[in-house]
View: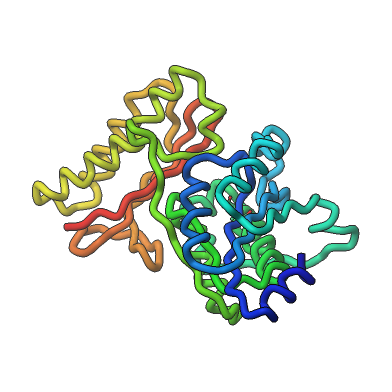
Length: 272
Ligand code: PAF
């Protein structure tokens, strides 16, 4: 991959990377299409990155369907599918990790210690291997997107980081490979996440600007579902992720909920 990237760049091509963990859905395809538009050589990576999963998380069960993914990637006109094995990415003796300290301590960083360190580490490796001019990421993983931007700026990666809007099911559920874990009842409960985000914007439109009321409303909507266990509901600054008390500018409403055994995240920028 490294040699191929060097050759393609020497030929004057603009290389785009769409990093994924596979089990591709329409959300990934939207990213891949965006990537296709933004450069000459589109590389899609598929790698279920072991170091971003905690010891009690779903690394082993994470859904995988390489053949289907390969067909989809080919159909979208990607030039290169990069799918390394864990032993190639983390050979014996591997001993380096990357930590974007400032943005990793809040939100998902609290209940998933080490997660963003694993994400940052694999992305630095992917960036060094693929040497992209552009990399595309979904806004559903908003904290991840901020961390990647910080990482690229701090470590002088000479590349553009593009965020792409969340793709949703008709009923609003954000697309995620983990949605495949949901039972029929859980799938219904999962709608409450997006419902609470939409309700929040309605409240803001009605002139409510204190975080407490918005968080209370979201807690009630999600909490009314028997399978739902809220991890966090946070109103925070969209750049620093620090909590805010008053919605007097665009503020991020970020939510993480366990529906049964499935941990789902979503977010929305609320505009006063
Ligand atoms: O968002 C994901 O799928 C993963 O965190 C990423 C960016 C591919 C790194 O493993």
